[in-house]
Image (cartoon, rainbow, N blue to C red; front, side):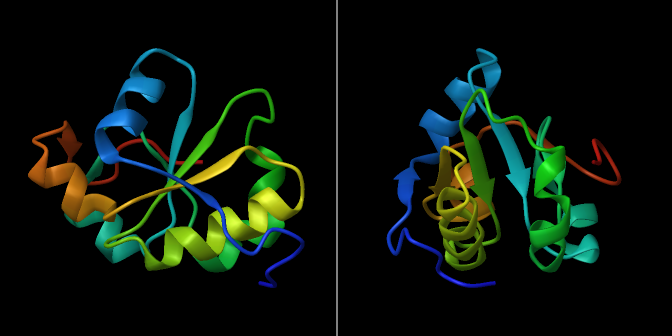
Length: 115
C-alpha cells in the first residue's frame, strides 16, 4: 500500500468518530485482523482488514467520511493515507480501539457487522 499523494491523513478522536458515525455522517471501518475484530470492535463498524483495502475500497461510500480504526492508530494511518490518496475523505481514529474503549464508547464482541 503506497502513500499516494497524501502523506499525512487527517485524524479524528474516537469521540468525534463515534458522533459522526452515530449521526450517519461517517462510517467506521476497522482494518484489524479477523482475530482482533472478534475480540471486540467499535459498534456498527465495518470490517476490512488492512491488506484487503486496496481491492475492497470500492465497497466504501464516497459521500461521507471513512473513519478508519485499528488497535492503536498505526494501521489506520496507513489505510487512511491510501484511501485519501485515491479520493476518499478518510480519517484515522487517533488511539484506535484502545481510545474508543477508554472513552467508554459502544463495543461489540464477535462477528458483528462485516463488509
